[in-house]
Every structure is written in structure tokens, then in C-alpha cells.
Length: 334
View 1: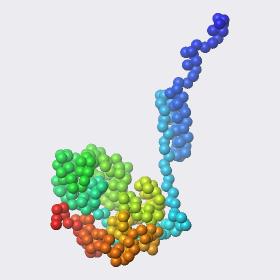
View 2: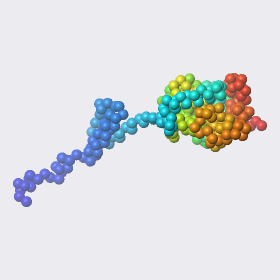
View 3: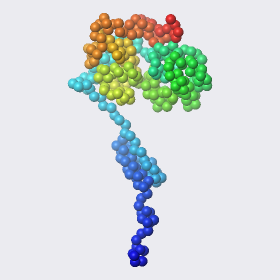
């Protein structure tokens, strides 16, 4: 090759220098996607641009933010959105007449006790929790006490609740977090509560609604089952159910609505064999007939005070007792 042509041809190192580095090229490509995603979610390009530029300079890839999903309420076939709202609110009004004394079925005297009891209620009944917590709170009445407790001693107390090792870690862990982060006080904000060990949105809304008077929807297994059975929503994810049902009611109704639905699910509208023949909202229920429709047979399926049996609380509110409800027996009682 002539010397002048060889001089004109760039060296391999020069060619590599002209090409963008693979990491930086990938970063620029991903950064572009991140900016587009930010724009779609309502963020300004300016706000998205700073971290993107920094990442590109560092040669890192940028992960696009996921847009917040909005849940649309889809009425059952043949039912308009307006009709669905009216039917749902009428069901709630009917249940409010049936359960005027509806309340959280966990015994508690302060926000800390309610928080711990709600965490313990996973995978067991409120009754079993209520029979277990008196010994727990007598020995460890404050977050400071439970945070410093011997885990083995706590496990022995919580053994009747099931999953006692995992629950011990949760309640001692959240107690430590309360002491270290919140001065031993239960926070009254959702974003703070869900950061505590063992606390999710369901637990947080139980505490907010019943200890602090802040409306929230408690999507437990009973709530999920009934709102789908009533065709208020066909969602299966708890967060999407919360959003869909919340859109049907004013926010001020959310806490009482949760009590009404959960009470009905425990007493009448059971999972395997609902007592359709004894159900006060049968004319409004699209699933009527899935359970026992004979009134006499259905009456025998009723649980708790509707069937003449004790409720789940050892120390229920006076309104419940005035309505004929009976307190549950303590642990070990005949």
C-alpha cells in the first residue's frame, strides 16, 4: 500500500475513538425511553432530564419509571355505571341496618395494640388473636417493652396464633421501628405505617380508620370475596379492588363500609356455603342461589351473634352488647 494512502487510513484506535462506547450508547437509548415514560406519566422532561443526563455521563443505563395504573370500574354485563353505584350504595345501607354495631373485631385500647393485633391476625381468626393478646400486652404494654423482649418468650405467648416465629419477628421489628423512627408512637400516615415490618396497606387502613378516624378500605379475604360475588368489580389484586370499590362510595363511607362487608362475610355470606335464604340483601345480589336458599336450612348456617353464638371480642363495645351480642370466652375457657 502506498505510504500516502496508509497515512490517510485511520488507525483502529482512532476508529474506536470515533464510535460511541457501547455502555454510553445503551445509556443514551435507555435514557430516551425514560424521558418518554416520564412524559407519559405526567413528569416534566426537565425533571426527568437531570438524572438521565447524569446516568448517561456515568455510562449507566436508566430504568424507565412504571406509570401508575388507573383502575376503571367495569359494571357487570347489562348494568350501567350509574346502576352499579346505586346498587352498591343500597347494599351498604341495608347492611348498616343489619349491623348497626359493626366494629373492628380485634380487642384494643390504643393504636399500638390495634397495630400489633392486626399484624397477628394474618392466617388466623380475630377470636384467637383476642384470646392471645391479653397475655402479650400484660407483659409488654409499650413498643419499648416489646422491642426489648426476648424473642423466645414472645414466641411462646404467640404460639396459639400460628406462624408464631414470623409473627414474633414482625411485632418486635415494628416495635423497634416505632421506638427508633417515631419516638414510640404509632404514626397516623399511610406512607409511614407501610414501612413498618409486617405492615401492608390492609393493616395500615385498619389502624388509620379505627385508631385515628381516617377513612380507608380494608381489603381482607372476606371483602375480596363479597365484592366480586356482588359484581362490584372483577379485579383480583387487592390494590385494584381497593381502587375500584373506593370509586363507588364517598370517602367518608370507606371505614364503615369495610366493617359492614366483612361482618356480612363472616356471619352470612360464607365462602363455601353462603346462607342465601337468610340474607337480607338477597334481592340485590347477582349471586343469589350459590348457597342454601331454604330459609330454615340457611338459618342454621349463620355464625356468631346471628346464629346465637358469642362474637369474636372478649371486650366488645357496649353498643354490641346492648344489641344482644355476647363476648367471646378467654383462651382455655370451657
